[in-house]
Length: 304
Image 1 (cartoon, rainbow, N blue to C red):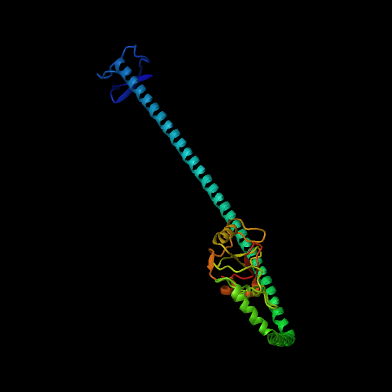
Image 2 (image 1 turned 180 degrees about the vertical axis):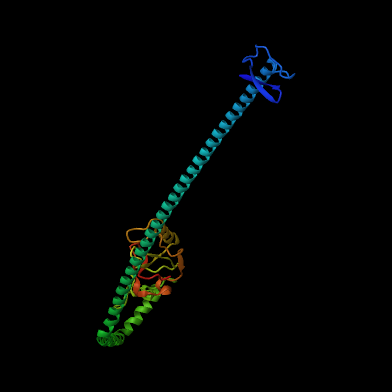
């Protein structure tokens, strides 16, 4: 490092290069009365430059750290955004799968309902066709033999009337004597078997089972309930006691059987205050004896 000094000589100026000490240990010089930098000033300047450089380095390090932190923060934000996008995609896929399963379940339920409805319609049509065929047979049969039946009935009535008249003519004295003897020998309050009411259930040559039932009447009435068979056909069952009817209704509702459709009971048991249920409920042609002792049932109809 050199120091240039200028000397004026007349109208010209000459620059002289004088060496400046490279270290603060060398002596200093003055130029035109101006002091040259001292050792203390040089050390202070060097210290200030070092502090400035350290401060700049610290700030640069802080800037680098802040940039690294910002980059890491942005990477974390991007990672969380990616995780959110994946979670949203998974949720969308899950909802789509649930919707597909629900649609499949709805279609299966609709198909099952349609199948059951078709089965019900088929069974109902079959039952209706059978009922119509039976009614047609019953309607055709009287037309074929009505005149013959009427002729036979008239013949039997005529023969019966002639027989009764002939018997009365020949046995009137004996009958009067027998009646007198019976009234004299029978205890008071006791009705002779010949004069007892035979009841409405005596068998007749013609008619349905209800016209000549094989079970005795119930003076206390009957307890009846309706249900469906496994072929979805209506059925009426009557019992003599309320607890018997309730036991049957419980069986229908809770268990069913190989002939009874489970849960098909049509309400509670109802009381029918007649000697026979068909006397009030009708449908005499549908009634027959039940497998339950002393009970009656009607096929193909809910008489209640």
